[in-house]
Image (cartoon, rainbow, N blue to C red; front, side):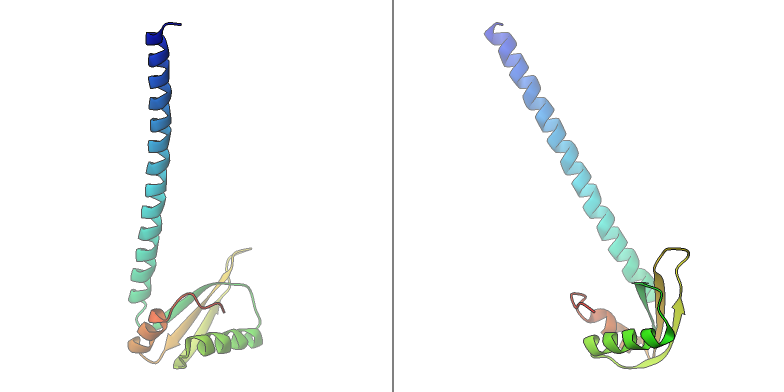
Length: 120
């Protein structure tokens, strides 16, 4: 193999590596953009709910257990201005949703502004 052929082979390998790297970066960028859009959509949906807060991803529970869940959530978030609650069981094996009606939109904004890093 001549030095010219070797040089061409090396260049093709380098191009191939760069193409793969570019493809990976594009995929990661798209994933980040999708996550950002999902977060924004969640925020917009929450804003439209007015004085209602949605807590999703809860397993099926009894009313007594739901009261305990609410007590833990309100204790962790240090907010306790609840008018009413509504539990919606998820379809089949999916997790349920708890709708919490608060006394005002201001209280809802306080709940949303509380750091999400708290583990309940």
